[in-house]
Image (tube, rainbow, N blue to C red; front, side, top):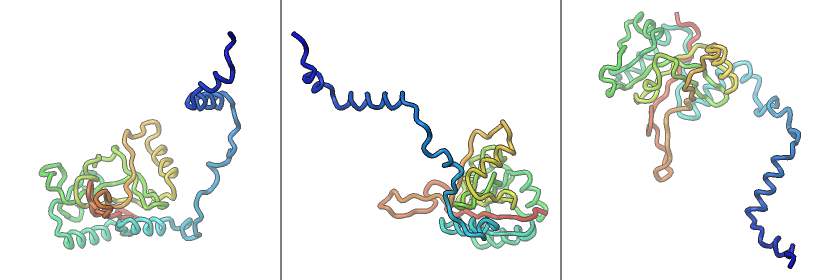
Length: 224
């Protein structure tokens, strides 16, 4: 007795039909309907933001509870960090970047060069890979001497950047990384957008829940 085609069709599950459609779709090659998508601008921006991305960065960083300080030189930086140290009564300040250590030592600013008593650290001073103006983020990697601990463990994180590290978008930051490291790309690259935060507990925003509760970004024109 011949099988009833309609009966067989009824026994094909909806899952099998879906999988059949997926297999068919995978076998059919289609042209990209949006070939120029990557070249299409996603944002509208003012002339000021294009010419002065640091303005946009400062606005975006402030919007996520970060602090932006522009300094023309190393002296202004020391003056500002002294004011912060007095305001917050900092005593345990850690800096592991040789370049920054030289700058701080030149002005006799006290800091810890090693990780002695690190569990009591109040401040971590680090360099960065780039500042991303679009969302006020700081790009960091494990290639810097500060590693990862110094930007995460202390309650206050101070980032030092040069004006040449300011870029507009994330893709521009990755270009800086590629140009700097060539084929030796760091194994850890991440972005920091303001102090750490969570709203998991009763939807109440808490800063510093799993990292620094204060972020200060210094943009320095000239380190000398």
